Length: 82
Image (cartoon, rainbow, N blue to C red; front, top):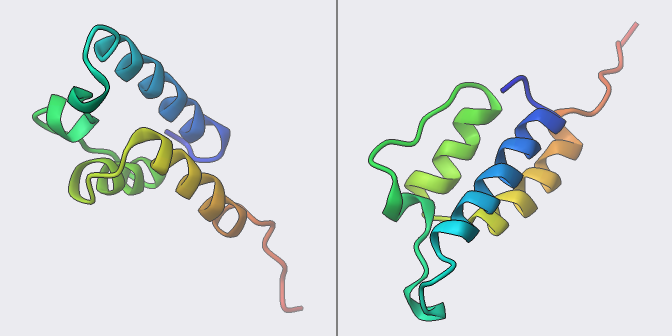
């Protein structure tokens, strides 16, 4: 995904997809990505999202919130010790 905003855009797209999948489902019968997809994978930040969505069974909204929180640290400008 390349990280940064691109990773976040994937989650926003997934959020819309899940919204459409769940449109006619009752509130207590809403599906999460781990219930819908047979395989969730990725590399780099996509791998982190895959762990959150698949292994940790986080909702897309929880994943977005965690991603925004972690992005501050992960994508912070690196300062040289020189």
